[in-house]
Length: 296
Image (cartoon, rainbow, N blue to C red):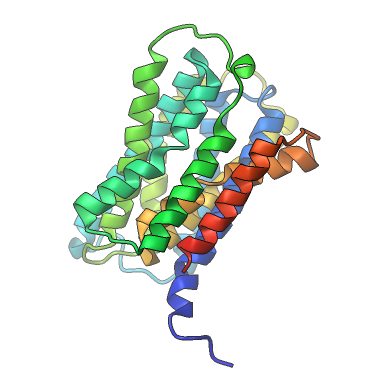
């Protein structure tokens, strides 16, 4: 039986977005489990290695225009710029976590889809239906709720520099997602070539940061496994964003993928045996309802 009209275009972006949601959530759960054993600099270094394996594997196994096609120079330039912003956002995020209360910093980082929606509306002219705007609002509200932690777990504040750092990270992530979507409107746009742009931008930002901060200490097999496995999942999530953004409205794709804390929470409950409070169940319900509305 043939799928109903419009089903395939929706699945073209919804499926990779949900895969990215799952991989980001599981990867974050593993980072949460092993963060005491691996530094943030080491995670950055291994993230670049993992994304390079995933991205170049995707590049070599999928059809694409010649990477250095003169018609595609604008696409490549915007693509690399987008992932320079993405890499800078991660570095700013790690720095703000080290200096400020993790609860507030984490909540701010989960709010970047709101900026993406604003930028997409103003700069890209994206318009959603009323039900989709309600769905996006529910997803973002649920993600913000799951990212919020009580004051007792916020941690000490060592410098007020965390405030501009976290706000800059928020701005960089919103800009990155908007640029990724804009790049697909340019000549010779290609998901496979965008994957390579992701690796280039990541190497120039996270790679440099990782080399400067992540080489110290022992590189045991255990440390490699506890780094490369979650970073491989993060890399798969990044690829899912690349594919989803090429087919669907970034105003929906970004909030859906940004709701990955719900997967992390489930992982923490089932594997790490952390308890889930009623407020978190309410946030999960809001995200699920929001996802259903977004896909309509």
